[in-house]
Image (spheres, helix red, strand yellow):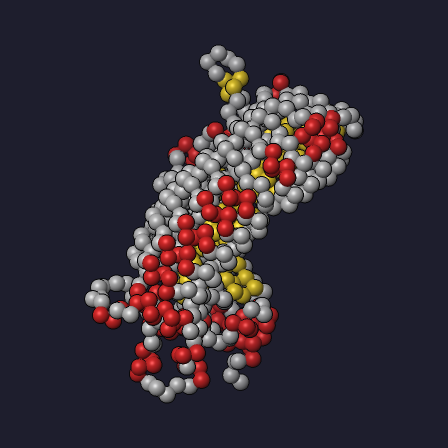
Length: 588
């Protein structure tokens, strides 16, 4: 067994001077030996406790205290650790002792303070999923490229300037996310990643692209043209090239390409040659470019369904040249907050409604109209006035600009998205929209507590607070009588929030990846609308059979907890089988 093999690598451990270190509740370690899973997310750890690394090696205390075991406590038959979750802590260094857990298939270290990784990571040859996003990594150890079984690697929001040249050795990698880094190029071996299906490269400084995936996101880079090799991507179905510097629509004879997003570039014309290549296209996004003329070849795209174009031209310069397919086709022209409709003798493709969004012109000192693309402004007036959306996301900002709230004054804002910032408190000016706000997203911030002010937004139906540092919710939340869903995954809840038991309108509660140790079925049964409950990857040591009486539940997720019953095989069968099992265990 690996616990004895691993022991040979650290034979002097018993003679080492032990220093004070963070501890893990013994009950969790004991449960982890049986389930093979250990969740230490959001515990304020600055380092990984040594007894975690030695979980497969050291003899359990119960083996030293009592030699008579029941069938359930045979420690020598217990499993090695396969899943270790350490996200949302303050870990600055990962020890080489990670090699003592060779059975790991999942290692989650996202949202920590790692600036480097140990070469010993390459010894985890069973690893299939490695999550390292939201750290401070400048580079990756070349030894990582030997992880032949790795299938998913997430590295977004780091400081990576390059990837190892040997990255192509990860032949089983199907998903790679290196968005929001500082990459200027990709390694030459990138094309060897033959299993790759999903790649996210947005928010970097790339000038070249890979060529062998189904979904490719290269938004927010510095691309001025697309390499010819991209046309050889026979499997490519979705391509995102938003916010680059393209002047021409890419020539992409990729036979499977269904969706092409090239909004917010500098495209001036649609050429016949490029359009004729898009034989399978169903969605073509061209908004925020400089297109003035639409050629009649657009009508040859018979598979096209939605067509979205936002032009920065002022209204009096907008000119459409297209096939004369139908007479008196209705066209909506949205200028600023005003909507105009008129009949037009031309329609871009048969039986479709064409929407042309034109930003309100701004007067320059010379009196001419000048347009600013929404991507160039901190305040997106179109979203505020037309979509009733107040968005300031993925800025890593510590506060929301006052000008954003000023621009939304007197608007019936329905949705707010302030995710992926560094907010430590709920912006108080949200109360200005208390009569209209129905959805709010504050995920991926640094919230330690949730202000009771949010409970004054009585129209709220959806709250997203994922990936913060919350450990409790205000009792006033029960006043949100229209609240249908709340997302609290990846926080620091040690118990099921009491107020959720009292928020009777809830239909969805997502509380995975916390430290919840118990749930009260009798109180859950009050939630007569609750259909989805996600408690995966928590610290539940016991699942009360009465949970099976919560008959409104259609989706119950309990995987990744250290309980022994019901067994993993039953949990894996799905909600119906799990609920039936729980009901069968209720004492009669």
